[in-house]
Length: 230
Length: 230
Image (cartoon, rainbow over the protein chains, first blue to last red):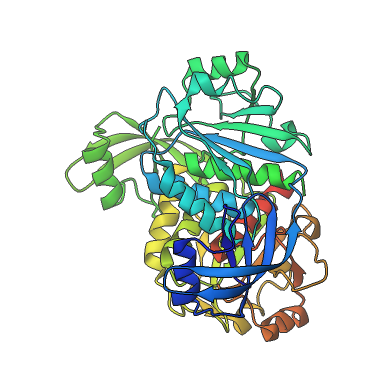
């Protein structure tokens, strides 16, 4: 079963998906497909018409998938090498995430981010992993603006301090919650940012004993929060 | 503190590490470095001599890190796109793994694998994450040879069956064990392989409800087993 994405309430695939269905998958009239709107609805449909640019379908049945009983939001400072962030987005969407936010930290090497390519990667990963929800991707904001958000969430900042034990995220977070986790840039958070987050009510947590790259830490946080809800 | 890798019982860095220390990091005589042998020993050392090709050091102190009280071995069928396996090796080493094995499955698209580049990636990830153990990487073998191994381990095969509930790896594995997990190729395991693994005593487990790419499944298995030992 091939899963396609059509956010609009129309009964034809996007131009890209139409091309993929007709040219690559060689699907034709009468073939059955699945189409998700990225908001939990999955249609089982039959292809009713095809031409070079458009693949139309007739909806046979629609299943609504309930959202997960918890919600993961990872906020990460983009890496200098954008491939690492693209990789994180693909993997996080595959294993399951509700929202990905980006911020500029004091030690950030990258201060600009184009969401378009990341959104394409998120859609592809959603389809590939057969999910019906497309995670939200947010435009990059400043650290100080970001920490004003998610007041009602379980909020954490991942930081491996020089000395002194810190709670592991898996122990600090409780199941069934709305989580917001801050992951710092390659140069880590500044002491000032750690203090600001602490003052804003973010709990300092570790993701294990190893020093992790930014994108590895971001994915590990996502994995840990998924596991405590398994 | 910069961590270097020297597997040999000598008091100078490899040619690559010497160049990195002298040219890139601009370290010189009297500077302090850390050197691991990849077998748990970490030397605190002082650079005693440098020339263009060799950076020699004097060991000041040696700390032995005990191995983890559990052992993770992930056995994966290499992906068609080798980048995905290189990515898995880097990430698995960062979060912590003892052994990575490769096998050829009935549906494998890739049947050859050069370990040299993967070993370089593993060393870089070990140094980057400040660890003292270098995981073992095994040459690729056939599926039938692989399942004869690890008789004393907790052995699992990751498979998302068409229907019927299957135990999650996090529930099936018990803490403090030696684990061996099989992760199939893009085309998944064949029914015959599932049966062979079952006959050989491998327990069928899932890694969650989403369909994961080969390399994502391999890393998720590693994360799950780390998590139950946290």
